[in-house]
Length: 109
Length: 114
Image (tube, rainbow over all chains, first blue to last red; front, side, top):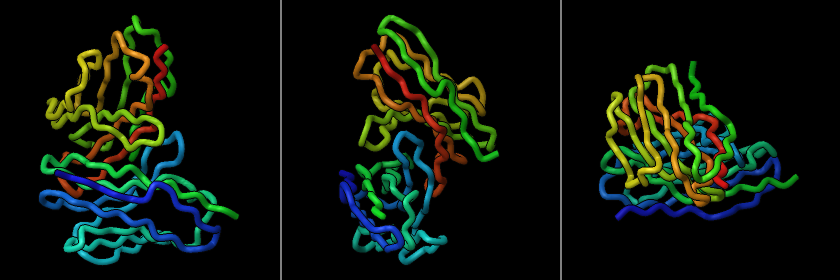
């Protein structure tokens, strides 16, 4: 079967760095997506990793280890607007997204 | 234009009503999706259209009826819904529904069934 795990909630301080982990078990691998979703709004795409390693995009970076079935999203220089849910998702064999439950990130001043 | 639009933003309906949700994109995407999302849960896939043909129906009750009039439009017709169908309904599109193509989401329709 397919399974995605990520922490339910995390708290961090404005200006700090936070790492949100995601572990997955899939039959086959077609890459891994990270989305951000503010409360009551639609998910927005953050990153897509298909090869091992770190991909940096401004304040956000995403890492993938296919051998470990592991990814993380790294957020630097946290801002209050980064308070949101962060969803990890992997495509299944039909290329449809299997979603993690999401990690609610709370930023404190 | 990198936007997916959805109307209406909010909808309140009774269990005997018939209503429709509409979604539109002009990015030339050939895959379009309907998701249902309950509070504090991830999106739940309902339907996928690929090249205007229904390719995936995730065992959705027949009171939800999708329609894809053309490559830019996607509708979701609602009839005889139940209160538990109240949720945020999200439309999304992607280039062609294959791996690596990010999905672009619309703002959603917040549906309340009384």
